[in-house]
Each structure stands twice: as C-alpha cells, then as structure tokens.
Image 1 (cartoon, rainbow, N blue to C red):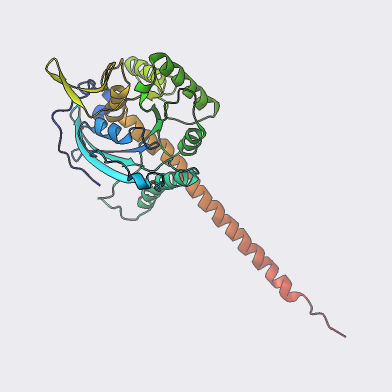
Image 2 (tube, rainbow, N blue to C red):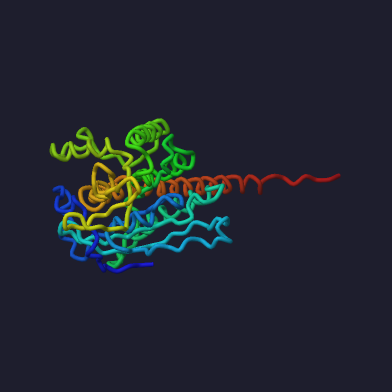
Length: 340
C-alpha cells in the first residue's frame, strides 16, 4: 500500500519543525526528495499504526476494525507492508518509506520472524552490492536499505524480554536500531524512569548494538551544540512514546492529545512524551547520521562479510580441485591386483 502526499491540515505540527541542525541542510538540494527508509517492529497492540500516522502528521493507515472474533486466536504470519509519504521538514523534501511488520511476535516461536526481517535487510544490501558491480549503472535505481528500525518495547516496567534481546542483538549489525517504550503513558513518571534505566542496563549487559548518538570522542567535527544535543539524546534512551490521532483545539491551535478520565496526555509535550523529540531526530537533526552510518558502517560491514565469504568459498573450491587433480595420476598409476 502506498499513500500520496495529501496532508491533513488539522494535525498539529512538530514543535521542533522550525529548527534544524547544520548537518541536515546538505540534503536540501535533493530536488526529487531525500529517500529515508524506516522499519517499524513490535508486537500487535503496541501502537505501530498510530505511531506511523502521528509521525507523518496525517492519516496514512486508517483504523482497522480489528480481527474477526472467531479467528482472533489464530496467529497470522508476519508480513511486510509498505507505505510511502512525501513530506517537507524545514524546507527539505523527504520521501519517507515506512515498512511495517504486522504479525511480528504473535507466535509462540518467533524464530521465523527474526529470520524474515534479517533476510529482508540483507536483500536490500544485496541489491546495492549488485548495482555497484554492474558495468553500466541504472540511473533509476532506488536504494531501499533500511536507515532506521524503530523497535517497540512492551511497557512491562521490569526489563527486556527474551524476544527483545534476541531481535535487537541479531539485527543490530544490519540497521540502526532505535528502541522505544510503547504506550509509555501506561507507566507513572517514576516507573518510566526506572524502566528506562533497566532497559539500558540490559542493552549494555547483553552487548546489544543499538544506534548510539556519537559523542565528542567519536566525532571531532561536531560543534559544542551538537555534542550537548547528542548527550541529551543518549540520556533520553529508550525514547518513551505516545501516539495519538485525536486533535483538539487549545488556545486557538491544534494539539494532539490522548484523553483519560484523570486528564490528557499531550503527544508533543516533552513533559508527557519523547515522541516529538524522536520525530525531530528521524526527520531532521539526525537523518544524515542515520543514512551515513547505514552506508559507511553497516553496509560496508555486510559487503566485507559477503565478499570475504565468497572469496573463502572460491579458495576452498580451488584447493579441493587441486587436491583432486594431484591424486588423480597417483590413482591411475596404482598397479591392479592380480587374483591368483
């Protein structure tokens, strides 16, 4: 499914949309739009569709009526659903390609889901590798490598589960994983602080390679403002997100809110949710970092592994052929035994 660029004017814009980091301006000359590919992974019920619509600030995917009651107990196989939205952020045209993964985590054994996603990511790398090896390049080739994978963590309030650890460990060297706590408004402020710390402790303990905003030691070219911004973003991880499609009028401006008997949660209020900051990271301040790391680190790592594996396999085959050729004359020279 693909959507056009029709925009819902009633949706509140991001509060960060008027600001940008210097690094994002180098892409403003992309006349046809800067492609940016994002994959959403998380179990059903964690708000992936709402997140998608809130991220794009329009209704990309309409609300579903829910599963048939008679078939609700049947786990559907995981699928890849594609949505394309053209948008503009800070004067920069972006072609946002979103890959959703309905059905992930709905089975007892999710090994198949892990393999499917890993294969999908590697197939996109293979496409670029094949294009690089062509004598004549295809000028219309579209780079479909996933620049960011948003992984939705269930807000248990305890720690990462086995499915979370396995998925992120397996895919961390194939894409930029950004973990988020889904439906974070189900936790109290104190519970959220503790849960964030436990998640980051688990990520460190299990050596999970999530996207880490670079510090000054890794990039000497960053200015002081960028260094401070990255430090602030690292401290916010995992991002606590709340999605919402409901818009109310507050003081003459549209505001996205989730209404509860005890009050409201404002999606774009930094005191209520990290969503707006995450959106700014994805579509403005760090879009260049995510694209560059995909090309210069993740793809190069895969390319090296792929070509090294092909070289080793070729060398092994050559050694095997030499071994067979060396023993062939000796076998022919062996005298036949004579039976008396």
